[in-house]
Length: 328
Image (cartoon, rainbow, N blue to C red; front, side):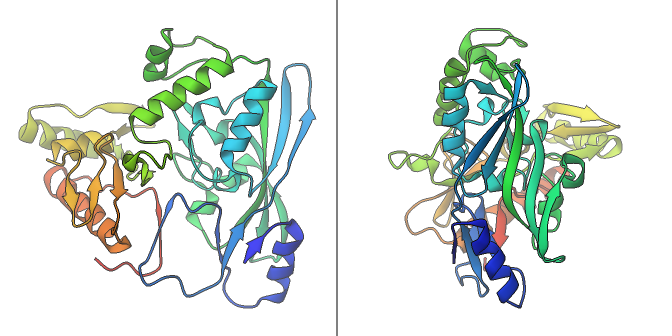
């Protein structure tokens, strides 16, 4: 069923007993079983964007969940609103952004979200959730923890005004632009730079690029306790002679690179698993060539997870959501 207005969602919720339906935007971050899905599916097709100017330097932008994220990026570039520019090129709809706290190249949506309007299936009513209530974390949120409880209806962002980006915090972006960390550049220059980086990795949906037929980065960068990190380092150094990278750390925990661990475990770009394969451009992407099934993707993911765990003691977790029963 297509949801084109908030009333469509409310009418369905109030007249349809049974389990909460699966809600999809563009389906870019899900793997659906080859057996299909036996319950109701709602396709979010709502549209709309409202700007409320807060002051000379900030504005709040409230966007319907069904709006393609690419349209929002086009809008903020044209209007000179910053805070989302490093996320350019990410597929999907706005309603998907808070679900896994989408982020890339030094930005994540938790930094700008002011509230999320949802339909609460347990309470059978609309709610406005604050960022604290959304429980945002690294690629996680309340919505991902309990995927059947809420359907996102709209998302509000507090963005800066002025046609200049937020400070650059990611080395690769700074190099692409020929500037330094902490620099601000025109948004109209930063967005093309982000898209160029993503295209080189096959991370911009492009019918002409077979490497873009993926769900994006397939595994989360694992977060390890101090004790686990010490053990992982010991095992990795013993097996490879290299120390794993520490991407970030806080509260005694360290986040390391899933892609790096995959490569050191022996997985190579272009490697096949039945009809699925690792991207030739990006180790973390699993590509679905013609004829690839969900079972092939699940088999590839399981093979990678098991080998990395056996060698290094780290269990990689997938980013995409698996829908239905997965045969492997």
